[in-house]
Image 1 (cartoon, helix red, strand yellow):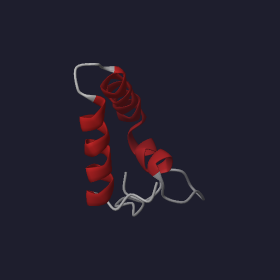
Image 2 (cartoon, one colour):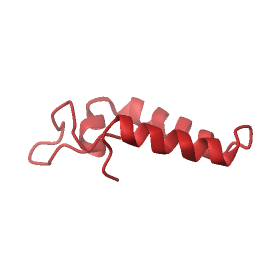
Image 3 (cartoon, one colour):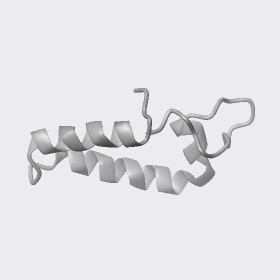
Length: 65
């Protein structure tokens, strides 16, 4: 996830972060976490490839985590 949010926080008085930005669509956040959990729990994709994917995504989205 980018550490530079492209949307404003949906929670008044809270800074923009993944949790507060995705609060614009709570049902989507739940589905995202289902998909994310399935991806990391799955043995269909080699763990090294998953990590490479995670690192590339972090770089592309300017993720600071």
